[in-house]
Image: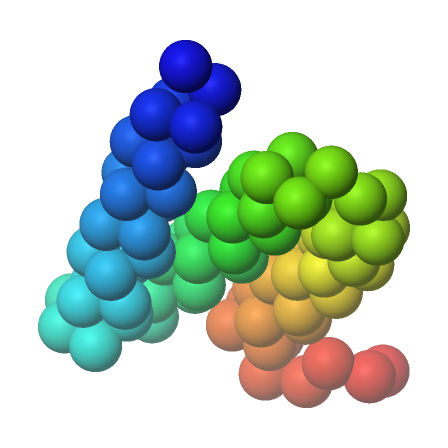
Length: 89
C-alpha cells in the first residue's frame, strides 16, 4: 500500500515540477518566475523526502534540509535584487 502511495506522490510532485518549469519559461513577469523557482525548490525537497522514505535512509532527509536552506537563500537574494537592483550592499 505504501508503494502505491509513494508512486502517486512521485507522479504528482513530478507533474508539479514540470508545470513550475513551464511557468519559469513563460511567466508574465519576474515576480511570477521567482515564485515558480521557489515552488520548484519546494517540490524538489518533497521528491527528496519521498525518495528517502522509499529507500529507508536518512541521508536524503539531510540533503533535503540543505536544499531547503539553499532554496531559501536564493529566493531572498532574487527578491532583494528585484527590489533594490543590488544583492550585497
